[in-house]
Amino acid sequence: MEPVIAPFKTELIEPRRPWKTLSHAELGTAERVDWYNHRRLHGKTGHLPPVEYEANYYQETAKPQVTATIWDLHQTRGGSSIAVMAAWRMRRVRLPIRPAVRWWR
Image (cartoon, rainbow, N blue to C red):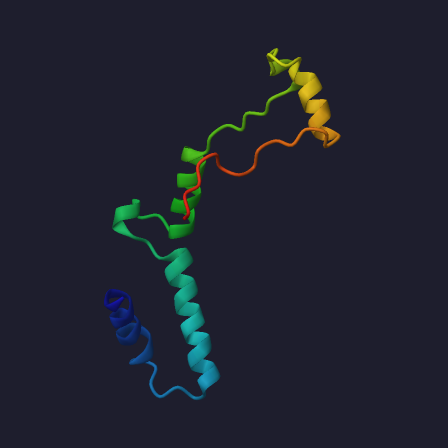
């Protein structure tokens, strides 16, 4: 935490002393936090702002969403999967929600 607080004190708090009011100090702090979180350039991120780096990360690691359709389902032993899905929709079949193994004692 110290690598964040020390530059904050030397770059923002000390040069602008004395602050006129507490609200001026709060506004300066909010501006500094906004700059640090959204616009600051960092060498380890390829000199990109944190927001842009995070957006690139999620775009690169996004997995395509796969949705199953009725036609993708296959035949089951107890009957067709379509019948199971229809029964589930009408709440006649209860699908398991709890884990099979108890992890608590």
